[in-house]
Amino acid sequence: MSYTYPTPPVTVAPDATSIQVHQFMKTPALIAKRVRELVNEKFIADFLLGQRLKAVGGAILYETGEEIYPLDAPEAVAPGAAYPLTSMTAGELAAAKTVKWGRDAEVTDEAISRLQMSPVERALRKLANGTVRHVDSVALGVIASKLTGSYAGGAWTSAGQIIEDVLMAKASHEETHAGEDYNLNVIVLRPTQYAKVAAKLVNDGMLPREAENPIGTGVFGPYMGLTWTTSTHVPFTDPTLVDNEQLGGMADEDLGGPGYAKVAGVGIETKVIRDEDHDKYKPRARRVTVPVVLEPNAGLRITGTGV
Image (cartoon, rainbow, N blue to C red; front, side, top):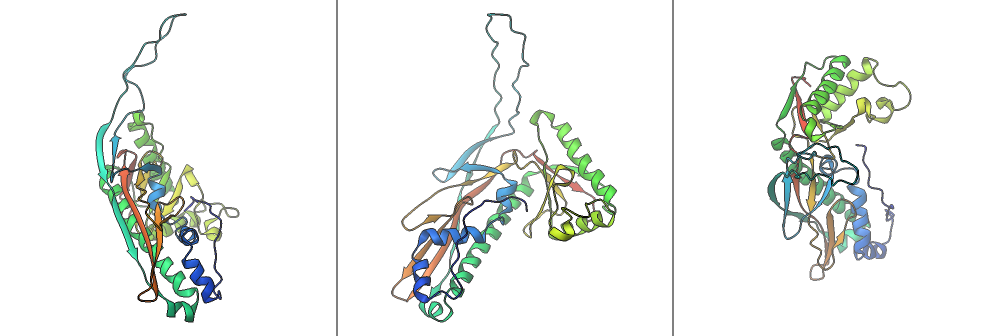
């Protein structure tokens, strides 16, 4: 995927001494930065639901379906005259409740003494991957349930058919919903679909042969004005176009609490609990969040592609 949240790298050498690893486990800021690196560019939920929302008191109130235009058109105003007022449109009021998703792991003193940083790295990686998988699955499931628009395409057996369907789906949907001013700028595919589409476009000579060729980079460029993205957690069976600036956002709640450190940019909070009675640490990762689809019309599926 093509989005990034830059952060200074934090590393502990694999051959670090046990004393250094214990010091690392006692430093919340370093744990948070390491988890930040492990989840970097992995949350597709934060990319598709691009707005950053704030939940307070366990829930968020929001409006959906609001038009971007006022009820009245501008009028000619004579010199020195007052400007006419117009009524502002409002969307339908809705509410969403946050959920605290979290998990602990265990790292014993024996594991640190014998393997140094390795058991810590494995624990943090698993916690990070588990959080990404679950939050993405929940968010993508919400998106799938909210999007109702579709475009009937043809079988994607040629680059020409792919290009025609994608551009026609984008143009027709934006034209139909001109009052909402959508810009469908992201296309979401399953990994196997992504691979098939890339191969077809390359085989048909539709992609650059030198710079930005996905054969060399493994990543689609912004072809047809779209960001092409994929995730193993995508539940859609059809290629899906969205406007990731208007579709919605992830509403995170900052619970705080003693010993917690916030992972910058992704809403995760981390903590390491020392269990002196059992000579071990319990690293923890949690995210208190809820996916919010503000504009259900800010996306559609392309059906009949066969990919």
